[in-house]
Image 1: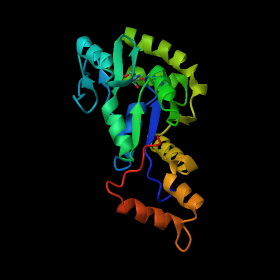
Image 2 (image 1 turned 180 degrees about the horizontal axis):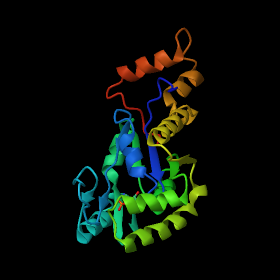
Image 3 (image 1 turned 30 degrees about the vertical axis):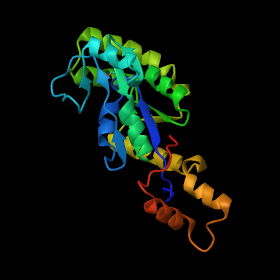
Length: 231
Ligand code: 5GP
């Protein structure tokens, strides 16, 4: 359902309580379609986590240095640890026309919305609160105190759900992934994300040829072929 000739970048933010399955859903998104931003955190590495893939694990001093130098697009404190999104990667990918995905908590998401109005906010929830608790307990990565802290925090995060553009229930990962794909497809049809097409329509330069083919040709002929980021 994508409009050909749509070459603007898009920023997708996926939030949701700990245990909503955000990580699994984001990892299951089509890698050829989405650029996944890796966050910086001061949290301890969990067994199996890999530096540069799951997170950039940093000390508090290193994190503060990045924040003070303006190298984080957003940052937040969550259940005893700091998390932040490296600014450079996101800006570079969006300027290349990519669809970038951030998997971040609500305060960070709302900070990004302040800076980048056209970002798309998706809130992921499990089918029931009981399921959320069950997932947190069975994944066996947190102490009982941390689980309790995260469940309390889940209630706080859910309070902010109406600040989001879309609500997706994560009952089955494949279904949640499909819903996120559908959201991105619909978003990409919005005229402000189809700069080349809108320009051709307004300038009446699309006569005699299918507009999508014309825009595609024009884009591929351009040096670098990168449209201005619209995010
Ligand atoms: P976890 O410790 O379970 O990996 O992550 C805890 C929470 O921090 C999750 O809700 C996760 O989405 C969020 N988070 C991960 N990276 C970032 C980030 O860069 N910024 C913000 N604001 N939250 C993040």
